[in-house]
Length: 132
Image (cartoon, rainbow, N blue to C red):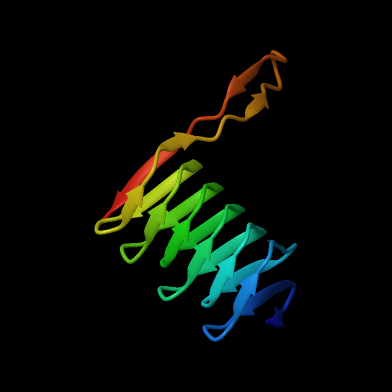
């Protein structure tokens, strides 16, 4: 796994020749072209077309282009046309390209945001975008 530092942001790369068995937790951005058998938690995830992830994904933002078998939780999620997902998808903002395949349920993440003025909790507003 290579780690690169460009200015103030750090990101790690799992090349296409890398296969990992075990959970991955990264405080930086993560780019995966190889295969992972385990759960992934990171700030931002970019998955390459040839990548395979067998496990759950949790990230602030995720851009998926390969195969994922497991649940996905992301604040901002982009599912590209080459993606093949088998699992439930939880999101705040979702973009799906035409041609992407998802076998599972879509549901907005249920987070309580506290209203500053009234002090009452209310659910966040999810959004969906379909890209062609």
